[in-house]
Image 1 (tube, rainbow, N blue to C red):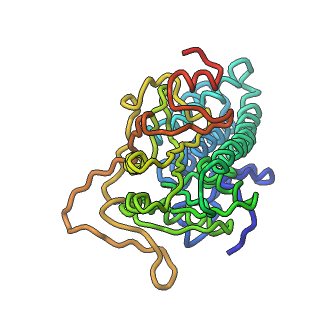
Image 2 (cartoon, rainbow, N blue to C red):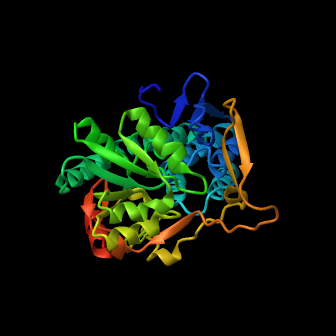
Image 3 (tube, rainbow, N blue to C red):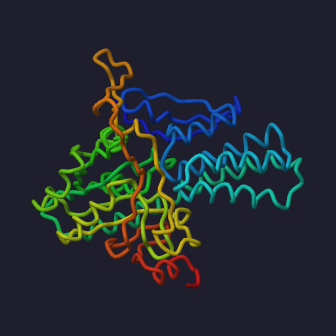
Length: 357
């Protein structure tokens, strides 16, 4: 497999089109999907061709710029923003990115909106790359401090690498930087049912980068911790409340509980754009409920290498499929942001990010 660096979203200046990696086809096929209509941007987010809080936000920013390039009117601005905002309810970056674009347009004449919106989307893309690089540097410092007998064994959940951002990632950024620095690292990758982002995306990313990793069933993670095979857990966040509560992919809370019971550091890596300062605690975060079929069946490759889907559950079986859970701040050892490392608390977050409590 090629180790040529990739990003998750690119702007083609010749065709004036945004292209994204269709993550629903990974790990069996790497395909760049052109997004040529507002509906295509909305479907890419809602159908999880793109996913990960930072990437969702940046994709939405480009989607709004695309809509305004075709009709720079106030009606288009409001309707396009509303359509994009409705695609996924949990990740706060979606609303944050749309607000960033709208604020950039506020002092301008509508004739300037298309160019300004595209410039802002490009700026957010570059900002995300720099932000994730700095998260990696701060997280690397934590990894260097871990008491290990040699290899640093890190557990992660879901996918918080460059497929969830633009480059580097959040939870995987410290791992990539540790590997680049020559530190011996090994990653336990949990499968992350029901969409298997760990299996399909994280393992693919890490293998591509040459980082040693081992795929494990979600339910095996607590046992690995009890056996002393995990030095720390690093996950990302789709929304972090002002008190440090973390909303991340379903299954994160169970890993945090197991880590606490085994005195293992549980770190959450996130950009400031993922912090919802208006949300006092995790109970206020809406939890996305996704379709039953994600749990009742499984997608993969057939023997010929083509896409296939198999039903797992008995015919007529019903399923409940929450996409996220809340990890209370008390279970989080530290939050790793682009500004540095802080405790998961109202005062520490506010102090690090220069805000009043």
